[in-house]
Image 1 (cartoon, rainbow, N blue to C red):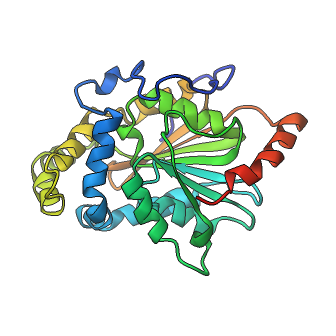
Image 2: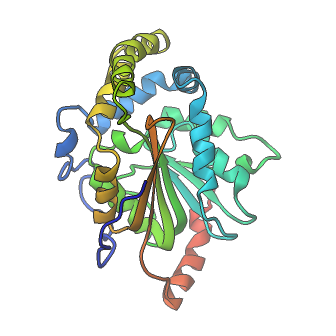
Amino acid sequence: MTAAAPPTADPASPSSGNATSTGNASHDSGLDKSNQRVREMFRQIAPRYDLMNHVLSLNIDKYWRWRTVRRLNMIAGVPILDTCTGTGDLAIAIAGKAPEGVDVVGSDFCHAMLEIARDKRKSGTPSEDINFLEADSQKLPFGDNRFQCVTVAFGLRNVTDTDLGLREMTRVCRPGGQVVVLEFSKPRLFGLRQIYGFYFRHVLPRIGQLFARNDKSAYKYLPESVGEFPDGAELAERMTAAGLRDVTFTPMTFGVCTLYIGVKPGELTADQLTAEDESTDNVSSSS
């Protein structure tokens, strides 16, 4: 399944001001997605986050990340950014398949999650060189056109302003590069949709509370955030509005999860290539 809309003329300019702006966040306005609330929630559940995800998804989340990495058009020598990286699973998967000379950067605004991500790096493997850094996805600390791919897995729905987050991902992506979103979605098939809704509203929160004893609201937040977040054609349209073209979306596992891919229009000029080369050392500096 694909969704496409006319490409916009120019990608968005760098964000400025308060990173918690909610200018286009009205779609999810019934949910507290403030930076402070989301950061504290993930700090509380960080120690059990990986186990919780694998149990609740029956390990299917690993398959979804594998499918995502397979769709990346990676070339040697150009860095890749995984934003809202959490405990680093997607960044580590990307590093394992990336060509030689590709620096992988993982950013997140939750220090506790990043500490776990850093501990998962293994000496003698591609993951040991991943640079995990603390940054707000609504105000990324990178110049324009830096990364050949910019990815986010199960994190975009937690961003206070979805559209600002998408514009920032587009801004730091180089022309011709991919912006990739892996996110939960709602099944369309009658019957399955009802079963899925019951599981998310009633079963998942109870199981999640066994893991997240310090913040029992965390897995009440999960079904609410999925239920209120745009998916399918609606999210694809918002990616197009953020400055991307040729946006496609691919539902997986009966529509429980969807992979979205957009391309940043244009080509790098000679001046941009020179500036990009000069910035590579800054992008790949250790955290």
